[in-house]
Image 1: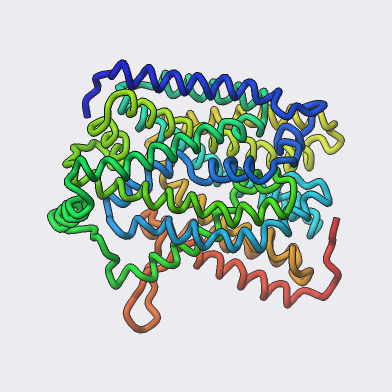
Image 2: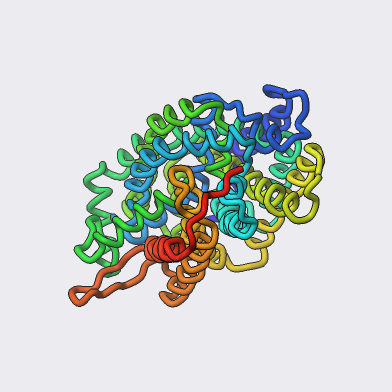
Length: 491
């Protein structure tokens, strides 16, 4: 890939990046509350986001810059298997429709800010609360770092190398997030999502015409897979179970993350959440179109240093400088929105479920908001250090583990919304088995999230997260059945 800087592309990129920076700082005056010195206002936007704001915000932090980069890269590398992201983003929305309004109501009624707040209110267990909070923070850190991977790919395509451009971008992000809280990414998400839609629609409409049509795109991809002896346009017979379980497990994990739950808790009603569950599949269509860019990379005969470069290189090669700059800005801004929400979600967890629980139980509302603001800065700096000083593969491995880890919080968070039968000791033991067992299985498989199982017949591959979740639930049920009966503790 050439390292020459295209002046037009860079100018367009800087213009839109500056635009969202201004919007980020202006956001502190958007729907301005009496004070931002309250975690409900800073960290949840006053719990007052309606249908459209929630749609852009949840879509913005669910479909991230790394998604825009990584999904086409996976399709470019392995073919059909990379499309697992499509069924999982379809399966997840019935789950959101049924479960999230119930969770939102519980949080609204009792003033809960985080998933760990809900768990503590349900079971009265500081240990289980801490396990859920720690899992959320640990799983979020590499996710933020991977937004930097997406931004790095864009900066590389612009010809901007080294650590300084990336550091500047995230320092700016940190400052306006500190100032405006959740209102900043909510406002920026409008611009980001509109830009991404324009970029993707233009790409799928125009790129094939430059490459001889879709028939040639698929034929070129098929020839490339056959030439290297791996990957295919269709799933192999031994991939069906792996594909299905990976999609299903990823769907269950998706709305356990602090950043997606932050968008849910910030909504103004359960009805708003249900409307979004109906509308958000529009992003799945967008994701499917994005994934096709992986096949187009083969048809364009791109020479890549990394599969992560496929989308930026396509735009740089096939479009004019101004549109390339626009596309790169859309992807970079697509890193800022989720990274901001992720850092806010992690900060809320630390503030409510560690600082307030163990360090300063009598902290004031203003003090709580201040701790959350400072923590959000620390989280961003930590993610930046991971990318700057550790191999990218380290963040990738941690992110694979992150999905398996966060899935282990589902029983403690969701089961208590519908039944009081489960109790803290069983759920905590289940979490421990699922968390540690899932980590071991991933390590044992060479840091791959899939595990080979043989039940006497032909062996098949299953998503490790589901195996860990099954063990988690099984342990929780057995221990709970052995415990003497007593009423559940509720806040």
